[in-house]
Amino acid sequence: MLSGMFSVSEAEAAAIRAAYERDGELAAAVELRRRCPGIFSNAQARECARIIASWKPLPKLPPALTQRRKAAQAQKRPRQDRGQRVADAGDNDGQFGGSR
Image (cartoon, rainbow, N blue to C red; front, side, top):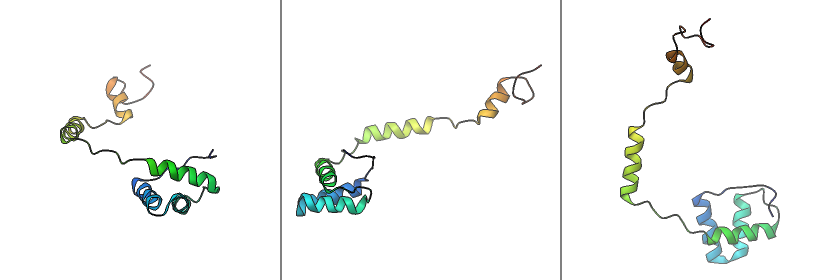
């Protein structure tokens, strides 16, 4: 078990996968330890390298879905400042805490 957490980018995962496929598990473990110096144990590095090598890249989203996401983001209103909303919500001349 790892004592902490780490993350790898898709490019790093691709490099570890390539080392695994080209030269085997030990090469992938060395590549992982080169990119993540916090992994001290060879056994942990080999285990993580096997796991990363088994990952498959995520499929690309279909064009219709990406277009819907872009359209939804374009329709979002800009956020107002929190203090501005409170000041506009009540007739207390922009002061917090209500009227007395």
